[in-house]
Length: 164
Image (cartoon, rainbow, N blue to C red; front, side, top):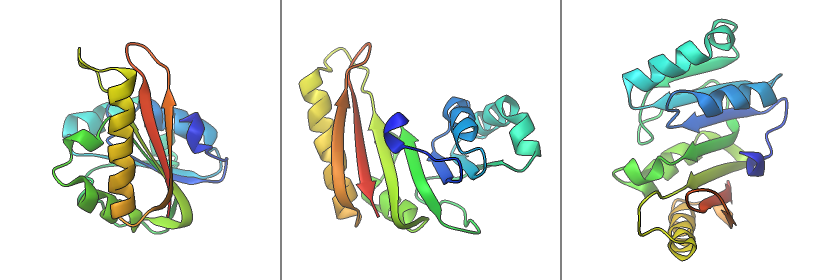
């Protein structure tokens, strides 16, 4: 998340929120902004809502059940969009990225992060996955895709930052 460089007044969307850990961290950084999150799982939305109950009640966080292919409408574009370990679950990643790009302001940044966790994953295969993600982002209309590989345990992570 540090690569996304979230500012206090940013409007940020996380796609695939899981139990809401990243949402919680984003809300502590975008303190004067707005944080939204979507997930296709009712259970994950419930868990994330519980974890972030105070900020949700205050209206600083909005969480909803939705998919990357059909995100809800929001009242203003986002400065940043983040997805962690969810792109590999999307049926048509390029179409999903196109849908999400419409929610991003011109010049806004999307971060797609993936940490593969299979026995066969190596730093090299992580780099290959990152290049594939960058190609999908470009196909979806994003410009300037910057692939970063970060050492982590148990395997490296690929993060592609793409500009709208």
